[in-house]
Length: 282
Image (cartoon, rainbow, N blue to C red; front, top):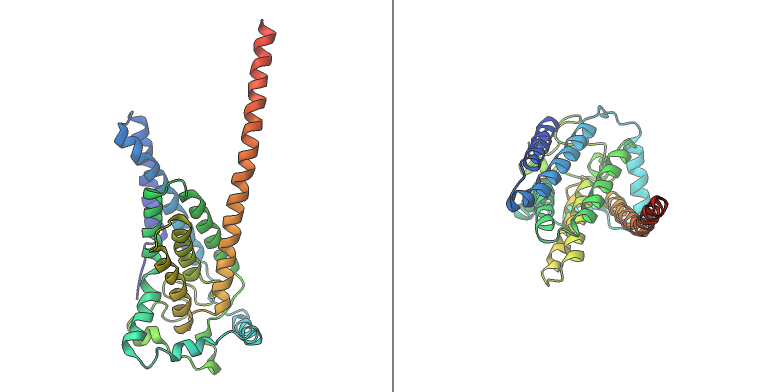
């Protein structure tokens, strides 16, 4: 069973990063030290957010609480709008061991490392674009944590659909029995996998003009496929996650525009006040 860093490990890393940031800042750093300051500050923030995410995911929400009924309602809705069924995606891979293994491996291992590599690349190569996508990531992740309180079972929990447990068959038992594993099994809605894949794929596409950016769009498409083929998520789970990302990016853009309009006004008022004080003294 796969494991990631725990909340307390992430919290310790965050505190160490803050301490290092403060130490470098107080020691009159060289140019190299000044260049490292933003990296330590950002690492402290990301580690703290990860720690909060881990704590929230471990809240005792193992009860079904209508999760099966909501899952069936989602299935009925998807059929009504003629989306392909998730079991149809699994049937494309279930009889091909190599393809099934790759599907499980992609689901179980790539979403976190892919996100980390993307954030490092964006921070190093496109620092001006980094805050926009980091804030979008924060909103989509926070949205997933809030919506998880509305319990929704994954497709593989609906017996009549006929799913097999691909993860168990091919050595990628991400979840295990209900209430164990690295994630809450009744929090299928929305899909963190799809939300994070959208941050990576759309972030790369929007940031660079390289022809290779189209390959990263495939990361989102493949993630959509594997979350369905494994039976871990509904199509709607991914659609909602992408919607949360869109909201986060729009909010960030709106706040930046608002701040851009307010800053000149505040600066002008400050200058006028300063001019008035000088006139009074004279």
